[in-house]
View 1 (tube, protein in one colour):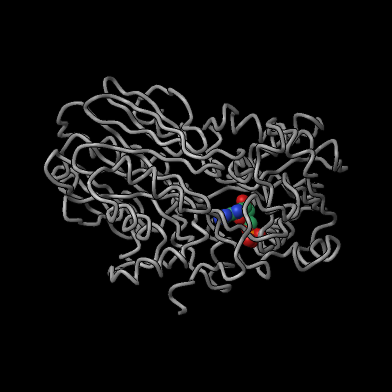
View 2 (cartoon, rainbow, N blue to C red):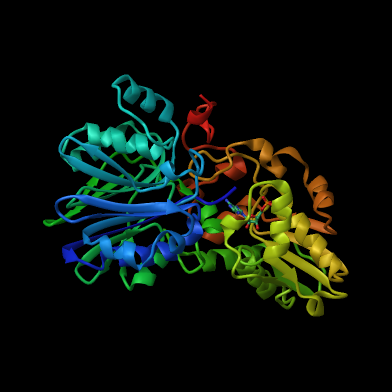
Length: 461
Ligand code: AMP
């Protein structure tokens, strides 16, 4: 299970030789949302130029490449695959050529009616290079002809699922959020430029000022005439609560809620709901740190850095085989013996997904001399797969879907295990529960999910 993608886009009223550099900085700030591939497309009024590749933003781009990407409109993408595997053709932005010019698309989320959409396109004889739903979106759009805004308004009516989109032709930029607003997308200003980003941290990184979130079902067009907003369908908002739990950076503000504040409150409520008799609160860095601080603030049990993280281990380094994953935890984290020896510890993390990581960490702390370990999780058990941008559509992979809590406690080797309740988590976030997607915790999907939806859908066929 990994996080979904990150988007960054900018429109400048005049040509800017440094435009791709701004996107690059924005993508660096969004790197936590995807480490598999990165890409930037730039429009200079005549054509679209682009560069993309597998790996971290820093690996994919250098001075020379950025120097060649100048223009006045640009979009960028960092990717973790939710549909299609990690191969170069699936890197984004996807650039497609039509009769009247080219179009570049960057997508965060997951479309659930791709099968129908794809067969429609195939019947018309359109060739596919990648296996992503993002390419389907790009082809659907280009098919509609040169009026990009109308194409978007039309195509969004046929798409079902989670999609934040940034798309551009050689001279204009469009930002779209699906009618349920599953994933975040905000708008900012940087001097006379308009910028869009998945999270506010990217605005901070480039020195842009936050203007507002793009609304669910909104299509925003930016071109030489300014900014124009259009509303498509709006049913109800179903913002992904896992953005607050894990995905987003703590220094981002989503739906006007500080992610840090939500996590700190989750830790406090966790301390009330799941108290523990202990000498030290330790957070699993970085994902559990803020909730651990909240737990400590509420319980009065001192917080300590019982686990130290190696900052230079890229996430892509950790290969998805069990053996290497186990090794990965040890290379990434180490227990601070001096601090944990002889102590009873409350070990806080944001979530348990497959259950592999926590077992390793508990073992590590025991080896370092911890007397007892009480695992506390700042979210409820994840029992249901996500079809809206998180990479866990197979329930069998989720430990809480197949095992009782007591069994999980034994499996991870903890003295006790306690999860935050769903009510507690919603209260910590502070948004009304009917504005959130809670499907991974309660199985109530805001959209009906076709049973055949899986990540490698097209590759298997
Ligand atoms: P595991 O239970 O071994 O699958 O991993 C749980 C750990 O992964 C926790 O520390 C979480 O912070 C982290 N985590 C949660 N969701 C994701 C995700 N979508 N991608 C990567 N790591 C995640």
